[in-house]
Amino acid sequence: MPLFMDIHTVDSAAFTVEDVVKAHMEDLAIEEKFGVKQIKYWVNVEAKTLFCLMKGPSRDACNEVHKESHGNTACNIIEVSEDEFNLYLGKGKSVDDLAHTNSGELDTGYRTILLLSVIDFTGEDTACIDKIHKIIDSHNGVLIIHPENEIMVSFILASDALICALNVRKLLSSTGKNLEYNLTLVSGRPVDEKGENLFEETKKKAKYLCSLRLNNTMYLDADTKELSDKERPSDKINPDAFIIVKQKEFIFLFKLFEVIKNKLNDPTFISEDLYESMGLSKSKTYRKIKALTGIAPNQLLQEIRLRNSLKSLKQNDKTISEIVYDSGFNSPAYYAQIFRRRFNVTPTLYIKISKNRSF
Image 1 (cartoon, rainbow, N blue to C red):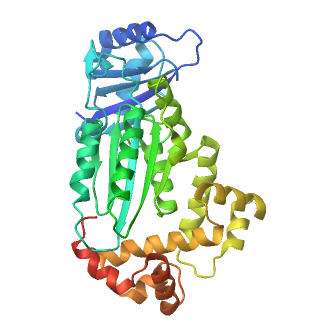
Image 2: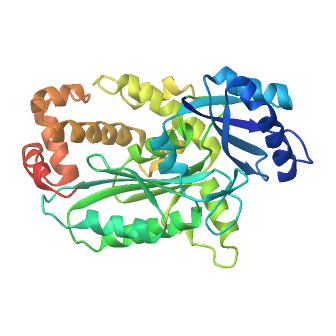
Image 3: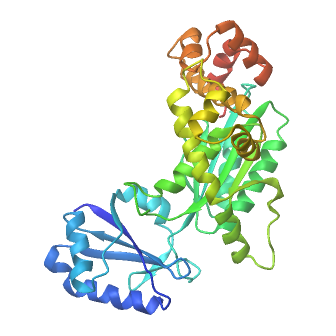
């Protein structure tokens, strides 16, 4: 049978773990009627959310168990693969199906996602990948993906993720090589009230922040900072190394990338068009982009187009001219000029060195 995970949000000032345990026992009493098997559940008392993992014939069958046993139906139910579940949520233990961390505390199900994008413009194998993996392991991180030049890691503790990020930055800064990186930390729920995938909104936030710019930038969402401060109240980690992003700024970011994604390969689309598409004044859009990225809107458009071209150059399945036009530039000569000015190598040389680099 397929594996499902749901989210419940509770609108009650008296929400307790005991309430959830009681509801779970009621589920267990009737689950066989619907062909469902409850496996594990996570409770976040502060956020008033809980997540149930179960096997069943369908989403509806899983929801019917909750509906008949206690009436608290799920806000959303998604199907998850066992492999993906184990990567994000496989650590820890359970006591009568209630999730705990290995140290014995309640496991809320929330995770901090670290996304690292590194571009090496030297072509020299710096052995950084192995060292980064050791840093991740030493801070209790679980490697999720490692495609091309990206690394995604999951952490139970936000404070572990922050310390890991700072150590990765220290390592990358010490190489003395011509490389650039973007490192992003975002925390969130395994299941959102909308969506179909595990940690969908959290991964989307991380992806967009990581796509903004390289230039050795580190982003940290406000939730991760708050969680870290609570986990280590006597040893707060200095967040000055990060650009801190609040929830309201993600709303702006989502709209920004939706606009840019649809116009990325249009060379006539410039910053003035961006202001109009965002539905905000020029000054407000400029201030928001500048605060998030440290660069002006026209520079951001160019940066994202260049980042897009880097991926295509590495894949090397198109001519440079095709990549130029696909990335929203209207002149190969101009593209080569700004590419070299930005990255200190030519596009042709980048293709060559990308074949044998560590990132």
